[in-house]
Length: 264
Image (cartoon, rainbow, N blue to C red):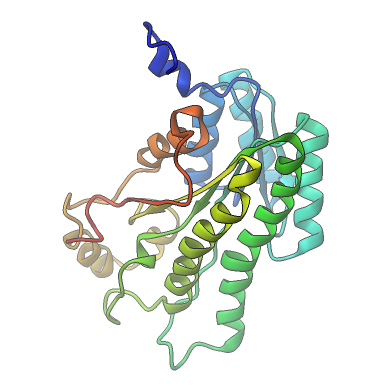
């Protein structure tokens, strides 16, 4: 048993000397996750198709927290782009210890009307993109003796919406696939010291939630036990746990952070 002395619990969450890559690296949720890791001492790379936006967030993170932070271009649906981004993190930050798969896409519409290109876009980004990032990151993690992968799923993986509440079948299906991919990869890579887990946020007051009309937003709030949308920073406690030694005996799990939305 580790010695339990004053400060032992706090020290388990420290990420000093660790290096992390966050895909889908623009937007409020990505910024909150990057700030959390940086506050714990981790160097951070943010990657998305819009490199300039990621670079701006990275510069702010570096200034506020005094860690190395970089922005990268990465299209997770393109394997060469993913491979290049991972290689750039390893080269510029000196390694890769933590991967957060936050890139996501959605397509709204009744399933009988959704074009195949809409379905394929969501699957290419959410499922294939997550797999590609996991695969290329894992190759480095295996070589160095371990790491932590955190996939961003969704409460939508566990609930089904009626048409007036949500017409996002490709999105919810893709997020359900992420839940199973998470447990499968955890089983495959545990022998290499790689932990793979997922966070399934509920409706957060940013990103896709903001695209809903007022009536749908109100209906969604009414279906959450806490009767409000979550805030980006309310995801970060679970993130800190899963990324750090505090969560060293957790793998293959998906954690709902949804204000009770999945059981309301």
